Image 1 (cartoon, one colour):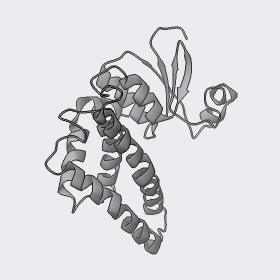
Image 2 (cartoon, helix red, strand yellow; image 1 turned 45 degrees about the vertical axis):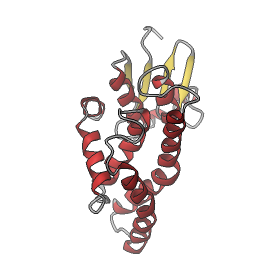
Image 3 (cartoon, rainbow, N blue to C red; image 1 turned 90 degrees about the horizontal axis):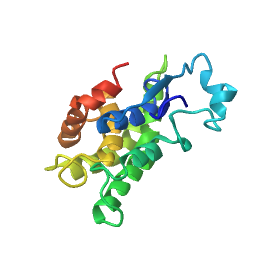
Image 4 (spheres, rainbow, N blue to C red; image 1 turned 180 degrees about the horizontal axis):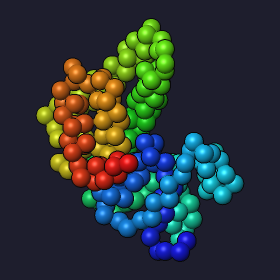
Length: 200
């Protein structure tokens, strides 16, 4: 690296946006290295040396490479107000919602989005996926009812990861009957750091 600032290897409108958003939330200096997935820049040997599967994001620091968006966000949030202290119930709840988001929601959202954006969507399959999404989305709506954030009284890394997923769900028109989840997604989308990270 030519700078002490970390480099984020990035493709717009991908999971890499989460890592960029975390950097923006924390106000950290960084260099953005945009890769063109359509031009197969993520498959070139230099990027495969950063990530064995050629995915993004990858964060490069003086210590080396770190991949997986949730791992990067947790690493960046360490010792900040966005991650409660180790060993506390609040930290355990942050981990709970992080894993809930990526295990119970993210994959289904990806499959539903993929079906919706096909030239000729399979309406039966789309309906089946909407049905499967109903339970995790309702669980989040219940958890957010009467609350501004998922854990405690302030924004944490759990809100960042789950918030990105609920903004996606809102764009897919999945939150119309879930007022707390919808309001949360709107709060997330209004955050200046989120807007900076998603500007392209």
